[in-house]
Image (cartoon, rainbow, N blue to C red):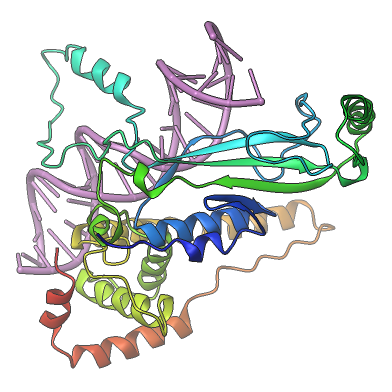
Length: 328
DNA sequence: TTAGACCCCGGGATGTATAA
DNA sequence: TTATACATCCCGGGGTCTAA
């Protein structure tokens, strides 16, 4: 059986509490840890449950219970409150749209509906995988530390703390992360075999947008640049993921779709810039005393030249080689 | 406080039509 | 065959409400 090592992810805990749980200081660190976990296990997680402002939740917004210990944090003499909670489902988790789908199936379409219907070759990717990641936002109050664990000390200090919070007092913000056991992914493969079911990586989406802005339109060309980007930038000096991993080697259709979206986005952003420029001219006429400064989006001129250099260079190579490497 | 059910909007993935 | 444009379905993200 393939051995999966998640130490690259768990090493990011600022305070490690167990094999699969620990604390980090902010959302960026938490999301980075989540990404490392996804990469190590070749899984994807999506946000299931969330409240506004995770990572910078206003502690006066709701009332909170003062805790000295709970299932996640052991007693360490300092009180804390839990202000927010995020739950991530495995990509192959429970289908949260099941009731809506059932409704759609049972509702009778009108006789005069001309809506086309599509034959979906692939079924749902939802496989009721129970794996979840819990992120809890805690605020700890070291100033309200107690020397000994007695009921009386806890009660009186909790009371003082609640009064302090009412007056706008604050404490140290921490994010507790509880990772699932690998055995919980029991309805689908993980590791290198799970790569086939991965969605495209966000970094690659950004890269496609950059390439499109620089003038790239062909799927073949973009695919070649993505391959170079993954192997020479993202995984510089380390072993790149296998070609079967669709997170880093997306299919032609996925690339095509992202190219099209980037083209549309670029087109509208140009219109937006022109419109904004005109608007600013109007404002200048209306309010001559006010100061306006408009800096348009910088063109990827340098990027563009490097892309074309690459293109010319890679055109010398055999295109079919690349296609064979990263075939659908 | 937490978990579950549900809703809505918009984006992602992918099928289809068409032109070059 | 490939690029372009769009349609359709699925699902992610963010939220509310309610019961326990």
